Structures are given as C-alpha cells and as structure tokens.
Length: 273
Ligand SMILES: C[S@@+](CC[C@H](N)C(=O)[O-])C[C@H]1O[C@@H](n2cnc3c(N)ncnc32)[C@H](O)[C@@H]1O
View 1 (spheres, protein in one colour):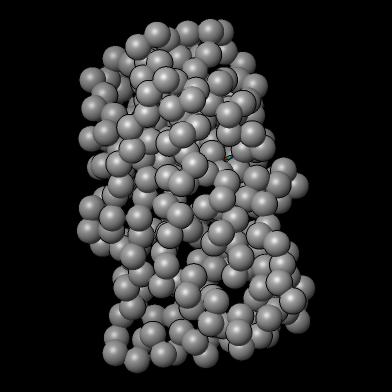
View 2 (tube, protein in one colour; view 1 turned 45 degrees about the horizontal axis):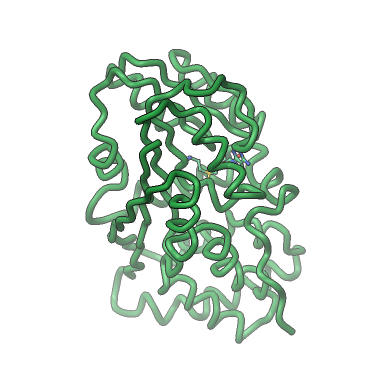
C-alpha cells in the first residue's frame, strides 16, 4: 500500500511539530554536531552581506537563534523574529531579550508596508499553506530595494538517508509515511518550484546552492534525527517499534566500515524588492 506524501504544509501537522522547540532542537543539534564542510550560518552571512544597520525580519524564526545571533554580534538595526507557533515565540523571547519576537503567520505579518530592509525565511516556506501568498506579504513589508532570502532543502536532500528509509520500508511498511516525507518537503518548496515563485512575486530571483554533509559516527543519532519528524511522531507505538528495528537492520550495513556520510544540498533563493 502506498501513502500520499504527508503535506509538509498541513496546518495541524505543522502546529503539532512546532508546538515547542523539542523536535526542531533534535535536528538543530544533529546539524551542529555532525556537519562537515561549508557552514550554513557563514554562507547565509556571506549571502546577506549585512552592514549592521539594516532593519531585518526573520519569518518562521523558530527558537530565534538567527536574530539572537545577529543581535549578540552587535547588529544595530531593528531585528524582529516572527513565528506562527506561540511556543516558539515564547522560547525565542526568553532566550534573546534584546530581539522583538511576534506570533504571526507568514501570510499575515503585523507590520506596515515597507517596514524592513531585509527579510529572511529560513527552512520555513515548505510549511506555509500558500507560498505565493506568503511571498506577496514578504514583498509588502520590504522597502523598495529591500532584500529577500529564502533558505530551503534541495529536492534531493540527504539522499543517502532517505534511501535507508526506503530500504527499511521495504523490510517493514510501518515506515511508509516516513518514507514519503522526502517528497513532501520537496514538493512544497525547493529549487524545483521556489525560483519561479520568487521570480513571480519579485520580478527577479537568484538561485544558489550549498553542498556539505553530515558524518554520523553511529546509528543512534541517525535514528534520533528520523524520530523527530512529524511522520514518525504520528506512528503508533507498535509501528515505531517495528520501524526502528527495520531502520537498525539497514543502518548496520552503512556503518560496517566506520562513520557514515550523508550529503546535504541547501538552496538559497534571493530577490530584491
Ligand atoms: C524548520 S523550522 C525553522 C526555524 C528557523 N528558521 C531555523 O532555520 O532554524 C520552521 C519554523 O517555521 C514556523 N512556521 C511554520 N509555518 C509557518 C507560517 N505559516 N508562518 C510563520 N511561521 C511558520 C514553525 O513554527 C517553525 O518554527
């Protein structure tokens, strides 16, 4: 039996996944501990080339690490983080007192027209119900000449990892919903459709890629990473037990000769208002 890809932008799933930062934190920690090669934050800084005076809005800010980091580095312009999740906003505000955080959806931002010099949407546009509506709203709150940057996963993101899930799903179909997660995110917002959407909203769009990797020392952090996904959390206990056993069996083959490398391709799409 095949299952349709779970919609990465299904509001109920998004609300469950991000009610708190618990599951996101697992993935952030995985990236922090096991990433090798070019570093995402440095590449984002290079792409934005901020001079520190800009007013900046980070939409879908999660626990607020990015605006918090800018503020701590001495950014002088007003920095604001917005997120749909009240739990995320609470977490962000308690972590970074110098930054203003607001609870708001990407398609209904509580700001006047032409309020910001820079708007970032990092790993969040695949969650919004309508990407064109969100982009229209981003354009509205940006000043003329203001800059937009979206960061997202490439259509083939972590292919080696999702191949493991697909193999494990052949051993036990309990993992079917997780196996199709891969295409759900890509379908919602990746380089395949994102550049055209941004071009349509802004009249210009520039696409670039960051290629790096995760090197896992053992199967456990791979399992923890997969188990933080919505499709896993939605499984019953029995399915999780069977799914974990199947994943462990397949992962054994990947760790036979030591650490296991999973490649990552991240997409940057930028535009000028
Ligand atoms: C994968 S996390 C990314 C967090 C952060 N930008 C980062 O890069 O670590 C996605 C975030 O987008 C938020 N989000 C999802 N749908 C949203 C929407 N329609 N409007 C605003 N935020 C949304 C979620 O609550 C979550 O905090």
